[in-house]
Image (cartoon, rainbow, N blue to C red; front, side):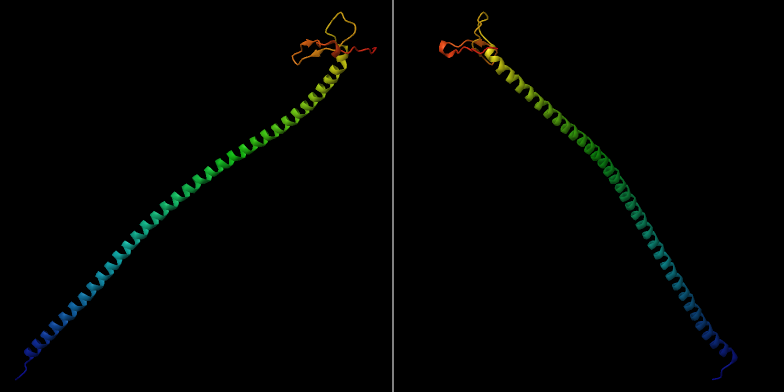
Length: 166
């Protein structure tokens, strides 16, 4: 068998054509797979970034809502604290007013007791000089009821003349 130049070229062409084509096909498939992998990674990174963006927006919304609630609670606390302080001041003023009124009332009451005691002593001192009979000069005792009605004792033995000279 004689190998001719044409057969060597054909064999080489077959080997080189088939091998080179396979090599280039393999290289092309490798690059294609690498590009698809990179695209898949980029898509996954985009999805991950989108998920992070969504999570960040949700967290910001939640944080804003929480901040608003805290501010609302602070305002409410300040309002009730101010209201409580005003009520305390009013209560202290009222308490002081009541204490002053009690002291004044107690002073007035003790003055009134003294005046009543003086008037009672005066009435007791005047009792011997009172008589139910206006023409009588003996100055006999009479009974004065709580209503102010003057009554004479019924029995003569109950009446004791007052012989004291004034």
